[in-house]
Image 1 (tube, rainbow, N blue to C red):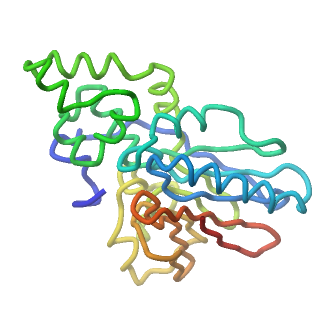
Image 2: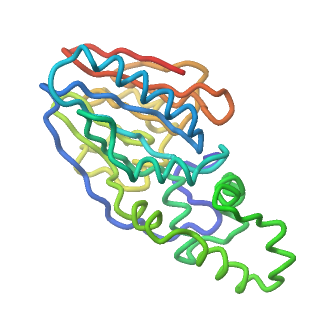
Length: 258
């Protein structure tokens, strides 16, 4: 999302809803993090197939952690959400974290963000994926109130419920999985919801040491970016066709892209 790292757009509410923060010990679990999908269903399926093949030589159950921003900008947001709502591949568990784009979609659904502001974030592609054409609908419903009511009523309730229930981070003894990053000046337990899904420069540019490896997305980079206990795996799939994942196992990190 472009612009200020602590805004939902011009309609940002004063506070974000409290979301679950998960604590896990993954020391005995091969774990894969997947970066921002942004509606790129084909790349997600290809990546899952790669991970299944890679995991076939590893012991026990495995875990996939999705780092948020499943929707907007790419063509198949609805298919991505439907896929993530289904069971993961055999012998895998899956945790999906929220990103700022999921929060923005819910803000629109809850009448806390205007349609115009949501569209600025790439929501036209999301609406198209649900069979909705906002340009055509604006002509059909010249009243903004009626237009919003029709769009909100057309979005599948189970998809909305899925987005509402997404946790915001996964913390392990050695790594933190989160959409955007953290404020290095605060302990992990004191991180704000807004920073966890929006932060950029205060995270990237701080001279302070990070408390553990932070695996995140949110800020697109040409190639996976590492630095000072930080790994960014958002490689802009909607623009580049390259979706990136990181495997944590045996004290090592391995990165792969479609």
